[in-house]
Image (cartoon, rainbow, N blue to C red; front, side):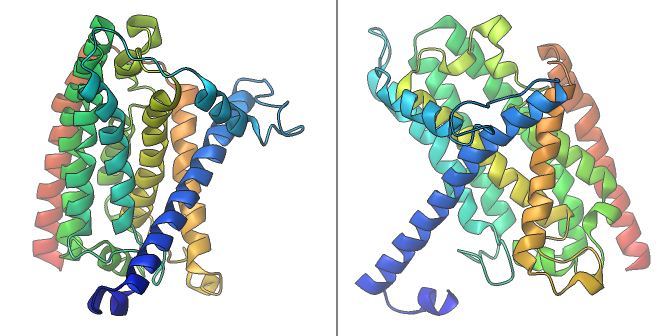
Amino acid sequence: MNELLQSAPNWTNTAIFFFLGVSLLMTVLGFVTYGILAERKVLGFMQARMGPSRVGGRFGLLQTVADVLKLLLKEDTIPKLADRPLFILAPVLAFAPAFMVLAAIPFSENLKFADIGVGLLYYIAVSGISTIGVLLGGWASNNKYALLGGMRSAAQMISYEIPLVMSVVGIVLLTGSLNLTEIVAAQENIAYIFLQPVAFLVFLIAATAELNRTPFDLPEAESELVAGYHVEYSGFRWAFFMLSEYVYLFAMASLTTILFLGGWHPPLPFLGFIPGVVWFALKFMSIVFIMIWFRASFPRIRADQLMSFGWKVLLPVALANIFVTAFIKELFF
C-alpha cells in the first residue's frame, strides 16, 4: 500500500484505489445489513420474542434486504416549502464523513487503507462534519419537529464530542502519538482498557451519545418529535440517514477496539497463532453487542439531564483523568 502511495499517479493506481474503496464500501454495507438484523434479533431475545423470522427462512436472513428494497421503491417526496438544494444535500453530508473516517482505521497490521500520521485527529475532525448534515436536514425540511430534532442533535453531538476527545488524551499521553497503528502497537503487552478504565467508560458513554443511540436518542424521539430531524424524509434519502448511523456504529466500534482493546493483538500471548483480523473482529463485535445491550436496557433520558450529564459529569471526569494520567506518567514512566 505504501509503495502505491509513493509511486506516480497512473490509471493502474487509480483503478486499484477505486477497487479498494468499493471493497470497503461493500464490507460496510454488509455489516449494516446484518448489523441491523443482529440488533433486531438480540433485542427480540432480550425482550422474550422472536425478532425477524419470515423473510429469508427461520432466522430472517433477508429481512433487512427486503426492507432496503422497500425503501428504494418508495416515492421520494420533497415538501413544497422545503429548501430543495439543502434538503437534497443534507443526507449526503451526513453519510460522506461516516464513510471517510474508515480510511484511517487499521484493521490489522497489514490491512489498512491510509496510514495517516495523525489518524486519531483525522477521525475526530472529519466525523464532526456529520453534525452539519443533521442540522441542515432539520432546517431545510421547514418543519418545526424536524428543526427541533436538528437543534437537539447539534447541541448533543457538540456537547458530547468534547468529553469524547478529552477521554482519548490520556491514551495520547501514554503513547506519544496520534497514529492509530502506533497506538495499537503500544498495547502489545497490555490493553489500555486496564490502564485507562475511566477513559474507556467516558469514551463509551460519549460515543453512544454521538451515535444518537439509546439512551441518548433525543434527536429522534418518536414520542416527542415524531421522528426528529428526518421526519420529512422518505425513501432513499431517509435510508441515507439510517445508513450513516450504522456506518458510524461500525467506525466507532472499530475505533474503540483500536484505542482500548489492543486492536488485533491477542489477549494472551499463547493465542498469537490466531490471525489478528479475527481478534479485531471479535473485539469489534463485543462493542457492537454492548451498544445493542444499552438499547434494550436503558430508557431515554430527558434533554436537560442529557446536557447536564455531559457538561457536569463526563467533562470533569475526563479532565481529571488527563491530570491523573499526566501525573502518573511523570512519576513512573
